Amino acid sequence: MTGKTYQAPRGTSDLLPPASERWARVEATTRTLFRLYGFQEIRTPIFEARELFDRGIGEMTDIVEKQMYVFQDRGGDWLALRPEGTASVLRAFVEHHLDQTMPPPYRYFYIGPMFRHERPQRGRYRQFHQIGVEALGESAPEVDAEVIALGWEFLRHVGARGIQVELNSIGCPTCRLPYQGALRAYWQAHADKLCPDCRRRMDRNPLRVLDCKNEACQAVLQGAPVIDDYWCNPCRTHFEAVRSALAALDVPYVRNARLVRGLDYYMRTAFEMTTEGLGAQNAVLGGGRYDGLLRALGGPDWPGIGFAIGMERLMDVLPETAEPVPALAVMFLPLTEAARGAALQGVQTVRRLGIPTWARMDVGSVKSGLRSAYRAGVRFVVIIGEDELRAGQWTLRDMSASRQETLSPKEAVEAIRRALGLDALET
Ligand code: HAM
Image (cartoon, rainbow, N blue to C red):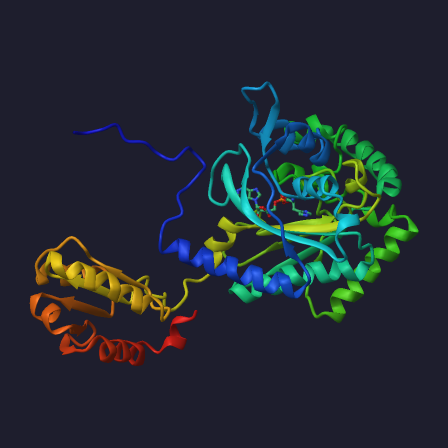
């Protein structure tokens, strides 16, 4: 019978072994490292009320205007697949009154899929995965530096090379207003040289024009007013303190006065990180401060700061680990139906030692069994035929030496342990 075949939807992908193993290792590093900084894991639903993102991310952003997967469910509720994690984490924080029910620090991290209807290309997908952090209730500029340092340390730790941190302060609503006015006037004076996209948004969202990658716009951008001339005193002081804290933590960065972010909730500190091997437009990490967002979502008037890392982009630039851990180290090969029970017990014994083991239960010849062992890349094959079953023994074949001997299960397990070195498996 032949059937119709199906493909994963455009812009999504299957995560297959062995890549899935590499992802799991990066996720394990996340859990260890982020906890060192006091962040605890939080998991929120993959869809939320659409309005949460409209209000949280901003109705004039590309994400909300063009990229959200919005749908009405059978009960008539308007929902959206989450395009990012910040709004959801803050929603959960407010809903569960975590400010009253938990002791500080209010630091959370998450790992999971996000959805944006973008034009798929390298590093840009419709379902992608983020590792993100949110620190709530902490306003000191040292915290900005600490959060940036965490992102930087993490990228270094997992092996990213050529990490570049770009830093800016986009001011607060007070000082941003006159800056937006100045930008608007400047864009209007140069409107004929701007791309249609920028012309469309220069009035409504003048800051976003700063981020345009179009070459013609780039030329205009060079002469645009800079935020530094508009910062209020508290914003200026905050930014200076972030910079000296970063210096104290030895985190190198470059100031990019034109760095703005694609979500409306940011204020003051904004940052992105790129690495070697990514296109220049593709940040592997993006984040910033968002004081005011928690209140806007019905919570206490607490500040917040965080970032998210794009996992697909990260995995794309990480060098392949030199020696991948073999998925399976030992394979049991029962040669008769009667030997299957002994094989099943055998794999359990070996697995309890922490050694990945599998039994090929569909009984066949030794030759075909060894062929699948070879393809699976296992180091040892345990053959249990009629003779072994009768004698209560295993024939242990070392695939790397093409040598085999018949041993008691205890001796065989000892030989496997010795050869593999249990420590070496704990990667
Ligand atoms: P974002 O800059 O929109 O920020 O996304 C963060 C990262 O997610 C990007 O730097 C990129 O690596 C990855 N990313 C975004 N869109 C895609 C896509 N279509 N395909 C693949 N990767 C993508 C946020 O989402 C904020 N919530 C970050 C944050 C947390 N700010 C404060 N707290």
